[in-house]
Image 1 (cartoon, rainbow over the protein chains, first blue to last red):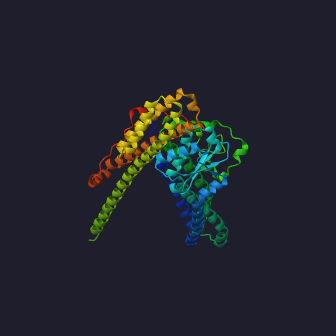
Image 2 (image 1 turned 135 degrees about the horizontal axis):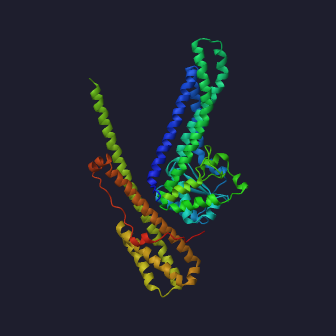
Image 3 (image 1 turned 90 degrees about the vertical axis):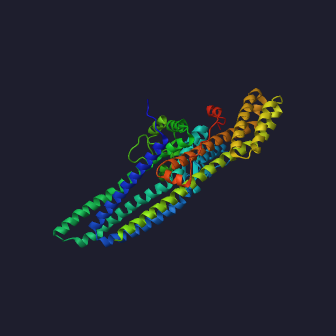
Length: 305
Length: 187
């Protein structure tokens, strides 16, 4: 007998894991900051922090408020029409009733591949985009599963969450960068110190360099890991909404088994990949740098629900 | 000597915050239940609006099926006449059953099944039936989170103080549960 997974458990488990991953990023952030301030002049560090925080905050705020428009424009999505895409409207209406969320604005993008994404900063400003391939190849239950998955991203505030993570990752990268560059200038002033203090400082600087190189990489990996966790969470919520695991499961099986022409892959900007319901590049294996969890694992978990 | 005073102030503050928090929580959860109930009503109303059109279309082809036509028209009248949600739900179930038998007899009239208008109505009614089911599901989900809030400590303490009681789930009629999800529209 296979163990039965309740979707509520799955959702709360994902929440805890995502939270832990955020904590890991924060700890890394603090270690990096502490090392840099030890290695350099503390007052100097303070200025760097303020500048980089203002810079990255304004940058992310702008992209956060326009994320939906940017995403839709980059795939050339068109608004869906109620008469032409009736099945999509029915599925989205059903899912918005089941989740108690407002109906998202619906868009369709031209692509043979079965895929979908949702964007927008909160459920009131949500947009959902489905490929023409998905509308052609999926039946009603499967489409409901896919729409339910995207609805869950909206319901879980995944857009907001991923933006927060992006801010943290961006901050770490910027600070690490500034630290590495500042070494060029500070190095000259400190040369010649032979006492114990000087040695300690050199060790700290080396450690700082090590962390500054490592931190952005680790932060990126962690954010990708969170993104993968979020996909599992959205699958679980989609089942909660449809109460019908085979719908989403069969959609994922169709996605796995379809072959995507190379010219279709080029339609997606690399930066858009994490937004989609399944990896548009269809990488054969999953590693630390994957934006999505392996599709077979998602199918297996849905099988046990 | 002042520390215990601060402690008392902090405690009072926490208790007041908790009172406000739980009051708002129950009000929000209660509102969600009312809202989900009206969602069911909206879908049932949409279905009732389609019935006259359907009856007219079917009558053109199947003149001898008066009984079934009467049943669906009566159910619609009962729905429109119902004042409380319980009556509406009951009439809504009857309407659904009557519609089911209409689509069953349609199998005997190939010309009717080929009618564009009929097909569109059939698709639309199938979609509405789905939405009714999802609206019921959301209603029960809302009741579940409300009941959990009322039953689980420490919310249970505040619930009894505010006089909040567990609410009853919407019972889905047994024959409706047995109906499998069928694809009408493979677009």
